[in-house]
Image (cartoon, rainbow, N blue to C red; front, side, top):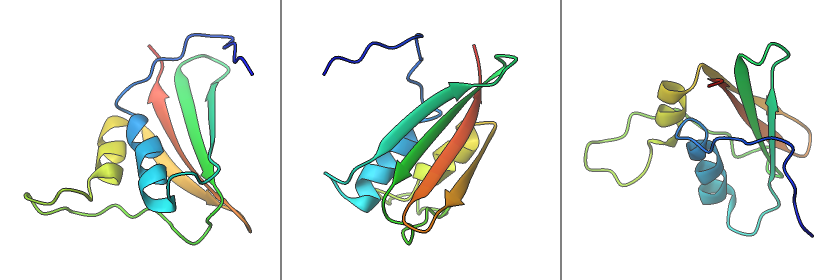
Length: 101
């Protein structure tokens, strides 16, 4: 299958942690859906990552200086306008919004 994007979507530091956190915590090979959309006024970009584990909720931690992990949600909070979680019966979606450029 060949994917043909309808628009150019910047891969940036604001939403990369969302994708990385899902793979790290749910596990490699888990089915993950990535959705990117813009607001009607084109001022914001919304990124949603859905995975099949409604129990593994992301937590914003304060990692120790020498810790090798635990900063994903802190990065997400620092680099995005806002973020949140939508929990379903058999999945969850972590989303964030960025200022469109």
